[in-house]
Picture 1 (cartoon, rainbow, N blue to C red):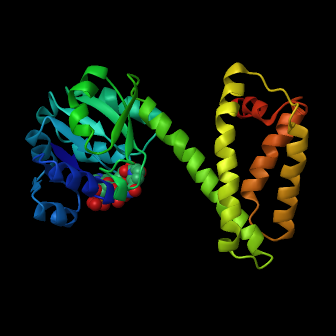
Picture 2: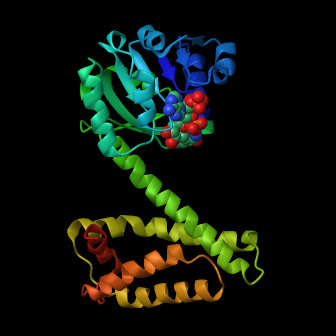
Picture 3: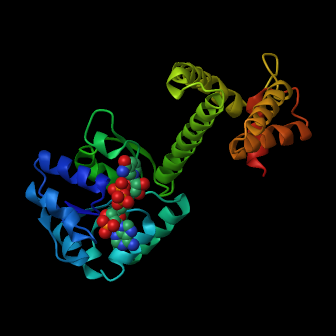
Length: 283
Ligand SMILES: NC(=O)c1ccc[n+]([C@@H]2O[C@H](COP(=O)([O-])OP(=O)(O)OC[C@H]3O[C@@H](n4cnc5c(N)ncnc54)[C@H](OP(=O)(O)O)[C@@H]3O)[C@@H](O)[C@H]2O)c1
């Protein structure tokens, strides 16, 4: 196979393919980044066209989809009959556009989203969302399995990045929330390490609530018998006020407070907080 893009993620994938005995051709804009994988047995192509010509399966691990156009923009005949697996982060819409662009050049696209850091590629913990033509996915699933457990989401090319971005939305926001909370306790001289076990307990509670929240969203049923938007909105205001009086950046709690404020204005005060998804759906 061919791997184009040798950042930490691309290099980890190449190492995994080589470890499993797959002959692997590589190309990277900055050629020196290929040194380690070439020492392990990868073949360095001189040009993107040569890299594409070398294998039916062409894996891209780039910063975004724009980099794909820069690299493959001048590659034409070599793309015919190729399967391009783009594992770069980008939007669902750009994933769909990329499928059309490659189809015009006679290539099929599978889009993927790797859900673990580079150090976990090829381990039991690794899993990767895929979307695109089912038959193309099935044909290459055994090779792709080397990267991590494949999780095929459907034929719409946008789905893999939709799931990827949704989970990154959850991860990035929660991570910044932890930093914010650590800064808040830190204003009283409490260390982040002292706070950490409480944060872990809190995140575990949140994880336990997710299935019931999801069921409420899908059923559009939000009884406020255990807690209401009004009650939690008052707390959101307290978090914001505590943040401001502590002199911290208030963007995150202000954004959360604003969602509660809008939910109450929309008549959801006595509903459960899961009802606020409607406020998010109608910005
Ligand atoms: N690293 C992780 O732990 C991780 C985890 C999950 C998902 N991902 C995703 O995996 C992808 C790759 O990650 P990475 O950590 O390996 O990223 P990276 O270090 O930023 O590497 C990006 C690669 O893209 C190339 N590139 C960027 N812009 C280019 C352009 N205009 N023309 C040609 N080449 C270009 C870089 O080439 P140069 O070497 O020449 O700069 C490099 O090979 C990203 O989409 C990332 O979101 C990464």
